[in-house]
Image: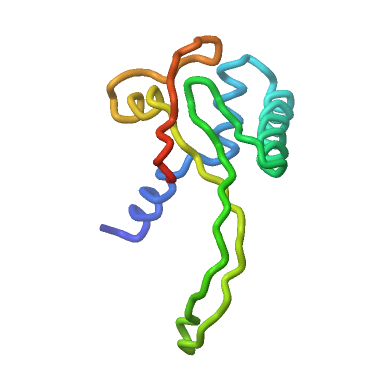
Length: 126
């Protein structure tokens, strides 16, 4: 496989922000600047709520949750010296069943207005 083909394949793996913005503008009929403002507002709101420690549940899509990692001990891979790893916070996404089914080809993602009773797996941390 040529280097150029590999770059094209890698490029196609990612759905970038500008592509999302174009898709939102197309689906909503909004001009790109307004669609961009709406997308920015959604992302900023999700980030702000997560920063406050709140869960963000998006009906038919999934749940963003903040998890805490406890402090621990580790080893510096270069020197082998023991180091302290401070506690930290991380964001996890738990897809709802309808999203998992849509990705696996078993169904479709519920629209925002649909009220599907769907819960994320509580034990799924990835």
